[in-house]
Length: 255
Image 1 (cartoon, rainbow, N blue to C red):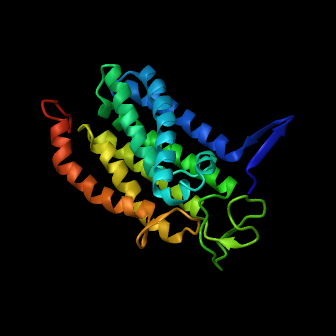
Image 2: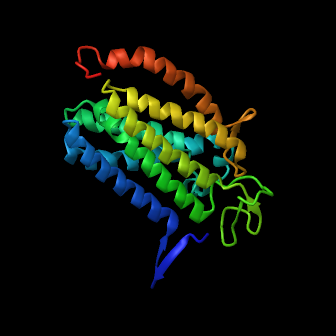
C-alpha cells in the first residue's frame, strides 16, 4: 500500500488524510440528508461536524500524551508533533464539542449526536482505509493467505505478512453504521443511538486489539483502548437503563 497518492510540484496528497477528508464530507452530507427526515436543522450539521472533528483530534492527541506521559516529558515537542492519537479521546472530545456547539445554538445536543452517529461510523470506516494506505494500526504477523504485506510503509514492518486489522476495523465500522441506521429508524428515544454506537465500538475495539502489533500504550495487561473499552461497556449498559430516561424526561417519543 502507498500513502502518497499523488504529488504535484511540492504538494503531496496522502492517502490517510484523503480518506479522513472523504469520511468527514460523507458524514456531513449523510447527516444533512437525514436531518430533514427527523425534523432537525441540516445546516447546523456542517458547523457541528467541523467543530467536533477539530476538537476531537485535539482531545485524541491529549489522551495520547496522557497515556504516554513518562515518554512525553522526556521529549514533549516530539510527541506533540507525532502522528500518535487515541481514538477514545477523539470520541469523548467530539461528543463534548457537539454538546457545547448545540447548546450555543439553542438545540439539544443528543438529538444531533444521535443523528450523526451512523455518519461517524462511516467516517471511521473511511479513516481505517486511510490506515491501510499508510500502514499504521497494523496487525500481528501471520501465515494466513489472507494476510497483507506492506512494502513502502513508514509504520508497519515491510515485507512481512500481517493480519489485515485495518480492513477488519473498516468493515466493522461500516457494519456498525448499518446497524445504527436500522436502529435509529426504529427508536427515537434520545441518547439510545449514541449509547449503542459507543457500546458496539467498544466491544469491537476490545477484541481487535488482540490482533494488533503496533505500540498503543498499555495499562496492566490491557492496551489503553482495551482498558477504556472495559469501562465503556458497562457504562453504556447502565446508560440505557438510567441515562436514557433522564434525557427523555418530558419528551414524547415514537416507538
